[in-house]
Image (cartoon, rainbow, N blue to C red; front, side):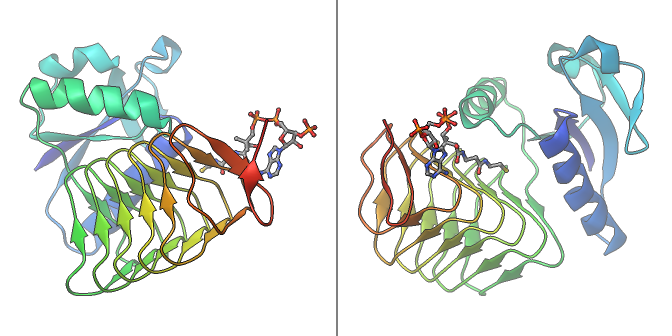
Length: 209
Ligand SMILES: CC(C)(COP(=O)(O)OP(=O)(O)OC[C@H]1O[C@@H](n2cnc3c(N)ncnc32)[C@H](O)[C@@H]1OP(=O)(O)O)[C@@H](O)C(=O)NCCC(=O)NCCS
């Protein structure tokens, strides 16, 4: 299976490394290279992989599927929609060190980084990211295009809405719903539901002006 990583910056490289670690554990795949809209990167190598061109050059590149290596949730969501409409297939990247209960469901295009733990009943929907050493406890859900940053810990029955970002090192108490496209600031302790498109931070988390 030939995979192209869309985006060669920091998150794209993390995604490429997850794929590489899967390959070292015997998963059959060929990481063809990156596409990135920074034209200065075209023709260079990143992590030993070729940067083949811009995102729009995808149709000219040999590939079976793509994966989005772009951290910005809104941009990643837009590209996921555009590429889905174009009939593209998405790879799913699960680092070999991730620990998943047997009934966990991980949807297409999702990325689970090194050290992730997901307990029973967990759901990671399309194009969502569970970043390095983050955890999702029982029956919690990451809705499409959301991102739980490194070291964040979600208790049981938590829902992270579509496109929401749960910042690095934060924690969320059981049963909380984080609204679509909201942001939880770094280091927050979220004890109550967060409305849509709202930024919260602090311990306990409050809306930031
Ligand atoms: C919360 C956050 C989004 C705010 O960013 P911002 O809109 O640029 O806000 P500013 O840095 O201008 O700060 C605005 C105010 O919020 C405060 N603030 C910023 N981040 C905060 C946080 N994590 N917790 C509590 N307060 C915070 C600032 O001190 C400032 O307060 P002041 O007006 O009294 O001085 C950002 O700081 C953050 O925590 N992002 C998470 C990033 C992350 O984890 N990314 C994942 C990478 S893999």
